[in-house]
Image 1 (cartoon, protein in one colour):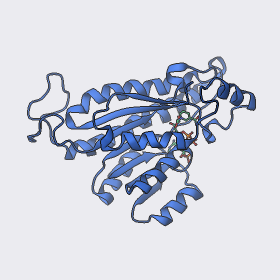
Image 2 (spheres, rainbow, N blue to C red; image 1 turned 60 degrees about the vertical axis):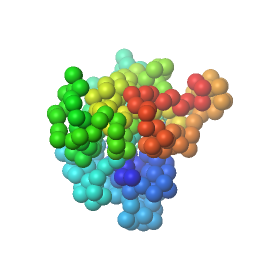
Image 3 (cartoon, rainbow, N blue to C red; image 1 turned 180 degrees about the horizontal axis):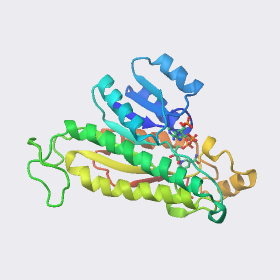
Length: 263
Ligand SMILES: NC(=O)c1ccc[n+]([C@@H]2O[C@H](COP(=O)([O-])OP(=O)(O)OC[C@H]3O[C@@H](n4cnc5c(N)ncnc54)[C@H](OP(=O)(O)O)[C@@H]3O)[C@@H](O)[C@H]2O)c1
């Protein structure tokens, strides 16, 4: 399988890159800067890992990247919109540029990435014989009944538990993640008949750079309110991603899978 994931240089993205390489996938990823861990993976898998440095908020760069990946690997099966940023701070003092960057990186860049991946997936997925009444997708020449012989294509967006639960100091970040969940639900209905599944994963707080600014008190409070009594790790989430991008999840779409230790 060919999988593309944004933000694979560290944290959850890096863990997903590692897991999908271990599964045997050909994997493509980008981030603004690389990392020694990603460079080591690229050295170990020169034929199966495609990594570039680019800013996901630069739509032209993302469009070029997706094109190069498809050219190099010959297609695209799974798209995982993972790259995101988080600015912590109460809304009353948050600056416009902080709000703009959260919306741009977390929402717009994720949507543009998914659109580009989707275009590639649609190009090789035949349209169903009869067009559904409200489908915005054009009719094609394919002869496949809905769901029949569907390619194993999927899109997964990485949300966060704060989208549904809320957290003080993360209102704008939460808004961006809630936007992605609505996006995933609607897109699932838009492309289901083309054999493409769309889901979201909503992790609880994870031990990564993104959450490194949490104070010790906050960390302890979050662990206390979690049924399993601890914060999550990237290892707690990658299994679910591997599942959602596998044939075992062939009938799962439009869902938000929460992985938060019982928060
Ligand atoms: N950590 C948590 O507690 C937690 C909880 C719930 C959900 N999540 C979600 O899980 C996902 C991964 O989070 P994480 O904790 O692994 O974050 P992280 O450790 O900060 O890693 C984020 C990744 O995204 C990349 N990235 C950020 N902005 C980018 C941009 N403009 N263009 C390209 N790449 C960019 C980063 O690389 P560069 O900085 O080099 O660009 C890095 O590879 C995110 O969607 C996050 O919202 C995290």
